Figure 1 (cartoon, rainbow over the protein chains, first blue to last red):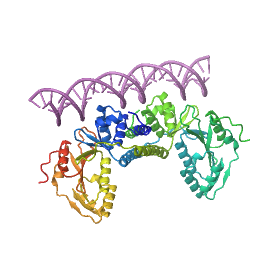
Figure 2: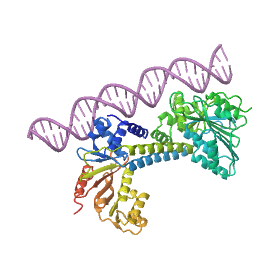
Figure 3: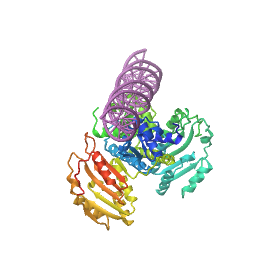
Figure 4: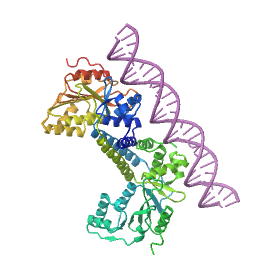
Length: 271
Length: 271
DNA sequence: AATCCCGTTCACTCAGATCGTCACACAAGC
DNA sequence: GCTTGTGTGACGATCTGAGTGAACGGGATT
């Protein structure tokens, strides 16, 4: 049974959503067939005929499939709207109750948190994005943001910056390219956007090396630097970031971290 | 390490959300500790110390944990808001792309769909709920709904009924108890709600047997009957439903189905 | 009525993933 | 130098799920 890419991806997605392979295949099969028997499902889904029944039972208990109790039994997938709605609700519920559980757990005391020097690293575009927004939202006096890669420009970023501006936070925005600078200026009223003079930022960018994506400095004491890690092993290029609080001498530590994290040498950019 | 219920449930939820046991335990541990080393995590999470590292790496790659690259490394969970938001977005994306894939799959022809006699069964409160709404929404002339169990009264049900009434669909609503009848009358304007005279509906209800939850008849041609299946094996009582289209003689088939599906004998209720 | 065929269920094997433990390299502190 | 403790990698044990085959039962055919 030859299988097209769409089918394979859909199966994989359903597995990510908690279904077993057979269950996923059966569901996909029933999405191609308006209705079908175990035999028909077996034929177009490559699921052993004798296991179709188990899979369907699970699918039915999840509200994704309807059963006609005739002989032979006939199965039918619920509408796509119903299916996605059901899935959404299932996961929303899970996440919601997880949230309440997390909020109910009491935090144990630990030695202390007051290290003046903290440098943390995060991975993944979404995590970095939401951390960026969070830092912007909690700014008290000043936000300095250098946008190197235009991929990081998102609606929520604009929102966060705009409300920060409305809160009378002083904004210092820089775009590394003309396009970015323009977009920033267009989207944010009453804000000055500078072209960064930091040529070394993109100057060091070569295809196989780390590329800076964003630099955010909040209240001169919290710093976040995002970068794209080159896909060393053919895997998808992940965005990484380090972020540091307490700037007494944090930048030094930060640069040290950047270097040890695989960044190319930057020769004394501050000079 | 004794473990309270909240912790166990949270771990189980995280596993349902795609994490491994170790990963889930580590994340929970980091939610109790503001920050911690591999050793500390090991001590309160029952995860072998040497495997904390793998788990944390996964968590970091999912944007749930931050790492301080000191020695020893210190780990910290992102805020609960960030975590839930990240999870939500992950699953929303999955469901969304799944939806587009499903809509892109072309439907193969099958013999025919025109069986006059269709009886389908569905399982699960959510699936039945959404099917109920769907049937109500697509009604063309008449809706008859008997609410036996008040648990099925939901906002979306009221919404659906109200818009149906606005569409000039003739509504026949019945509540099996005074409370249900009242609620229905209160929530729906310009509608008559009858007390059902069908005593056998609840008359047959004993603790260990099937209880009818709802009966819906749309346009006199589509029928849905919901019931609570007694939790035979201590599992949670699931709501089940059969629904049938094409009423030439569908009711007969339906009753046969009800009986074979495990319903108690109903002696000639129509008489 | 006996038989055959098909639908359905159950029991089983095998492979892969995960759990759990161990051995080792390395760094830091005494 | 020695000890303690962190981090990495490898290894068997265990469990889950994929895949296969036997057996049961009902309906249809002869």
